[in-house]
Image (cartoon, rainbow, N blue to C red; front, top):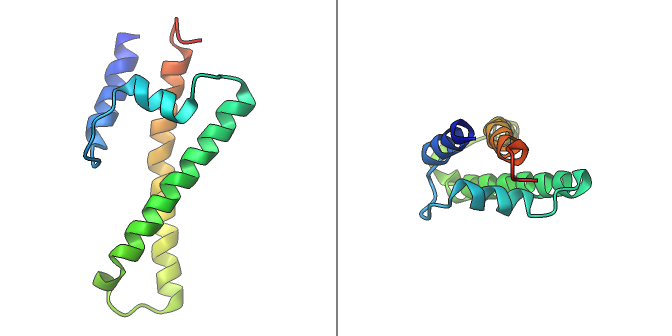
Length: 107
């Protein structure tokens, strides 16, 4: 369990772009919640992923001017790349949360 927590803490530090630090357990509960039925967990994961996509799109819109003139196809390509990156990063976060979920005493 200690090794699992250190993995999550390392991921938390690596992705510490936010201004507040949450403990790994707080992050797990935020995204997975306390009810751990498969449907509930899946719904919370999907909601968390949608929230991450929304944040990424808002940041893209906020910084859009820095990209210069883009065709609609280029703009779509940038957004696709951004969402793909969010998906890849979220896989790591979700895997870390699943490790915490599977740890003894967390069920």
